Length: 359
Length: 80
Image 1 (cartoon, each protein chain N blue to C red):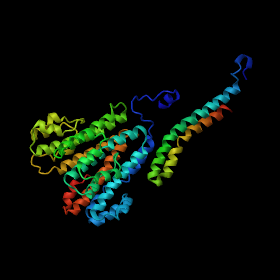
Image 2: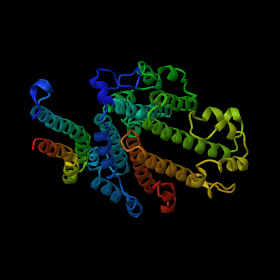
Image 3: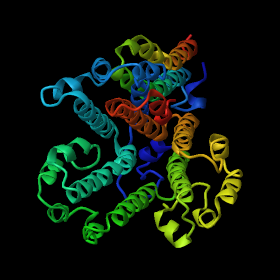
């Protein structure tokens, strides 16, 4: 259809004020699928759990992270080396996604990856409030969003959080960051998250095409999973006040209605969840007597990852497979980090295994 | 052979045959180009990550070539 429209000299039918140009869906999607096939298979995790830290670093060095470990081996060692290598690899991978996509696809990927800008701003604020060293802050930065690593290193080197906020004067986060007074970190962090999701939903717009609808569905599923995890934590901590819970909820979920679930006591809250699609994933770990939410959280995240893979097959030539790769890659990096940080602090293998989300 | 005076200047049978063959070749050629464009870029994308996919990519890329071969066959049949 587009071809005919172009021949007749008309603009493509998707009306939008944003100039998006033509996208290269087949190229980007196939390349990303090939990249996904290179993620660590699930069989490698039990092997990793049996290794020591040096062996894990070696294992990482022999995998897709080779270049990153080689590059950073001069500066760091042990757990720090692995941490930096993972962050660098994640940033480079996402940067590659931005480079290989064009037009509308690129626009959506960039909008999704803005979460790392929010992540980095949070890291700056936290680091400066607790007087972390510049190295410690640099270790936690992921240059996958719009900020480059160099510009972030400059920001990290600034002495106080006021200077950092001043340096971000021309970013979209400035009006919100101005409200930061050194004591309301939790509020600012929540608001940054909400701002990110509002921006992302704006970028998706009112979905008309099938792939946009699926993209919106995956993002809304993610919002639901985040809200659900938060609700469980709050319920376990005994919080039941609506006005305490609602500021922590993100709007735009798929199926959950936080304002209905928030005031319920734990038992009724769990009963209410039985009607949702999440019940299959979490039934059996929601009893009143459970002490740890770790299993529940990892099951919810696994459900989210699996759902995004299923949705990526529904519309094969769309942005969803790329989104699916982004979250799976992030999950792999998180898993590796859990393993070597857990090993470093001497946690038992069982405990580490519970934390992993292996697909 | 139709009489030129009754059929008009442009309805010459040999000319129409040639036009038919030209349409058969050009339209099918255009169609396979469109099909190969997407498959080719996808194959390049896969190859960029994994060079071992060269063979498979090449085969999949030339499959729509059959469309233009059918066009060629039709063009030859018209001109017989």
